[in-house]
Length: 85
Image 1 (cartoon, rainbow, N blue to C red):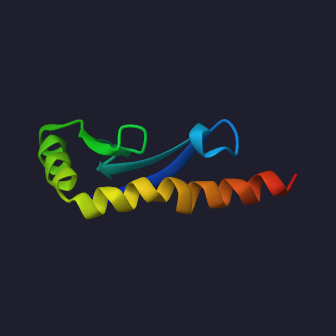
Image 2: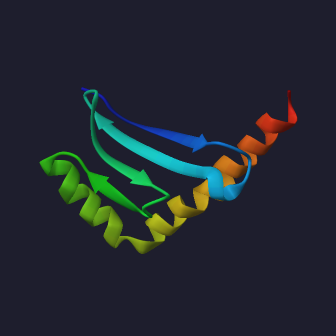
Image 3: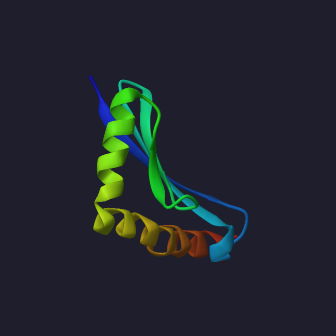
């Protein structure tokens, strides 16, 4: 059994408006919940994922932290990537 998460940044440029931070949560290769900075909340894809997403969405400090990751994690690293041709 495996439980893991994948954090990624989807972007078209180094402008903050063109960046989306996504955190996907998996169990046994099945994505059961996802946070998207565009939506600003978690979405569940299974029965367990819906319950978990509702709980995580109720934790406002946690969702605020993930919303900030778009700037602190994505923008920072994408800026480095664009600087190095």
